[in-house]
Length: 263
Image (tube, rainbow, N blue to C red; front, side, top):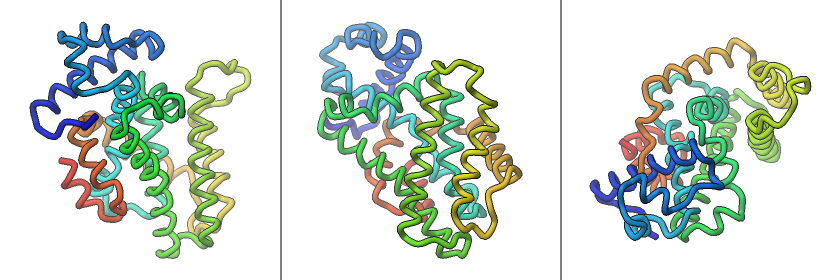
């Protein structure tokens, strides 16, 4: 199922996804049905099938247009003075901030990466999804390699690969446990402080010229919050998703090009 490329179909697709997001936030993913979505949008189920072959297409698309990678190139373009280490931290802080602002993002993030969901989506959606997931890992890899090149980090290629995995596993684990709301409060410490301490310990296992500290973390977090206050929904659209799908193979160091494509 091809994503729309013209303005009016894209606008209609966004309307459908907006309605789907509201349904998921009010009823959950399990109760989400195409017939309900058609009623909310004010169209027939046949119209929905012009954009999405099945429910899994909608879930994947909702995740893709909400993903933190939509915002990263724009932030980098506006903040060229960032160090490579700060670029490593950005996707983590952006993910935390997105979850704070979206009731459905954590659920979509968790469900979409499940093979029982994304494998049921149409071929084009699966291809876009894979590219975006790998671009997320590529962001960490490119940033760490940049840190090595600039002398911010002393690490071998194997250590870079291990640190990328450590960061992504840390992010997945911390989100799953905190956002599940299943763990009793007596087993958990302050969320923000805990996340910072575990991240700093992970980063400290490697030879950084300037180790991650609380001041750097707080400063980057403040910049992230200000950016989201202004631009949170600016790049949550079919057009932004399509632009990134075409540009996902472009190294993130060429951020001005990505940002221009995504406008």
